[in-house]
Length: 244
Image (cartoon, rainbow, N blue to C red; front, side):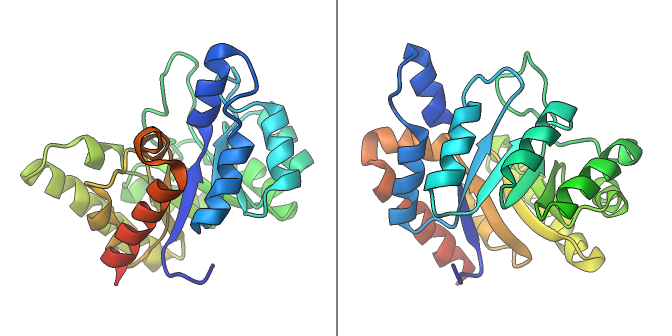
């Protein structure tokens, strides 16, 4: 879509609910179809090593049936590289992954891993997949992302979202603002996400060099009460209001 700030819906936790019972419901592909109705710009799905939520067949179905760009979140492993190259989603976001974590706990440490990441980024890019790196809002990590050949980064907003309102949150927002400005300076497209809600999204959406927000857990949880389409439309409204 043509908006200045895109919204990506992460559908992982629709699959989390489905997998709790082991049956086919609720279907994350149906959630993606409703996202189209709500005016969302893209779908994000994290195919984890342990397949705790999104499964291989979900990626296949999303690629075949949903008319929105798919952003495949993936660890920097040979297995995930092979899957990404087979399906060729619009984008692949390389994230850190630990089996024992409940959710992604921080950004990828690109600095120090450039030699490992650069060939993978090169293969994905050569296949026409837009690569992003999920990183902390730190200048050293941004510079390393450029060195590794990534055209896009997604800033981890978890510390901002978890900080108490007031000076602590303001300090985390300042980190995001400075990181987003540095992205523009060094030629990186800047995305952001993790822990964003109706209450905290506007300050991040106001950052002019952020092109996309990827939000999942809050939206899926809020949809229990409001319904998915109204929830997505409300997030879209808040983002548009902040950007305007």
